[in-house]
Amino acid sequence: MQRYLALDALRGLTIALMILVNTPGSWEFVYAPLLHASWHGITPTDLVFPFFLFIVGSAMYFAFKKQDFTLDTDSAIKVFKRSITMFLIGLALNAYPFTSSIESLRIMGVLQRIGIAYFFAAFIVLSFKRQQVLLISLHILVVYPFIFSLSGEGAYSLEMNVVRDIDLAILTAGHMYSGMGIAFDPEGLLSTLPSVVSVLFGFEVTRFISQLDSKKSSFKKLLQFGVIAIAFGLLLDLIIPINKALWTSSFVIYTTGFACLILALFVYIIDLNQIEKPMTPLFIYGTNPLFIYVLSWVWVASYGLFQVDDLGLHQWMFASLSTVLPEKFASFVFAFSHVAFFGWLSKLLYDRKIFIKI
Image (cartoon, rainbow, N blue to C red; front, top):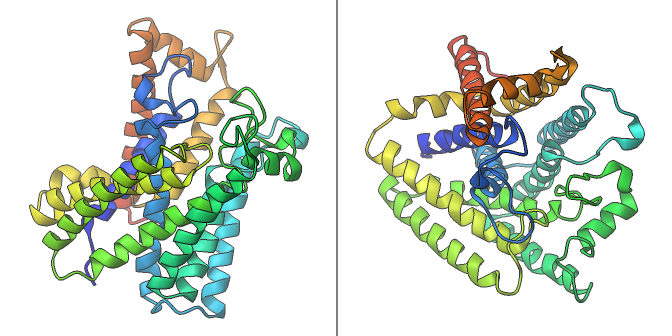
């Protein structure tokens, strides 16, 4: 079984980018590539979360390889515990700093989606062979837009989509994300279904390249997969819009293609040309990925507990930066300083051989 440093680099890059895009100095002043698409379409930021799910699938391959991909009581309990843990931590992050009422607590979120997607993907890969896993993935990608087609005209609009309808019926508006002007959750219940496929694709791509004879072959295959998936995703966009908030089938295929291309680039740089030293920060960043993500969330959310000159600490720091820098650049510097800080913290943990699994 081949182990790729490129996969470790992709994991580290993904965590660093998640912190970068989630921690601007002010949401009013953000460079366009660091914002999500307003609805249909895609920006570089929209690639980050699917990359994370791709990496979850990749990590699953190496974890389950040790137990020969067998589903038994012990492995089932471990999968269940990890899924529940991620979901509950995500729920706690939504509640932090615990100053709002439970009636307005958002139920879904990034970690919640990862926990659910991991749960279903894990049981699928442990219960079925490769061909069956791919067939299940294909069925999900076909059935999901079919469900939308039942809604008729406006099925992919913000106001009328079936994802929102189901969330309103089950979660209710008070427990959904409201940052898009109306109650709509970009990590909704139904839209978590195709995100399972993002995990499965990460698993199967890793399984495929790990079984090839050489890393040069892996590089070529990843390039082929990437180009074909991106082209097919764009073609599919003509009938099924690429949309992160709905996690459409075209979005799954398109973003998987980009994950393959970035992974191919890392394979070329690191595994083929042995250029490892410049990539060391990414390797280290990826050693405690979920813990660093959770800690970064809590850290930034905690700024709201402190005030300086009648401003929240977050606002005060950004205001201080924006007095000497243009506002958008100040917002970027604020975010990047957090990337650097958590990179330093990752190295601190790495040097002490502290690895915290969630």
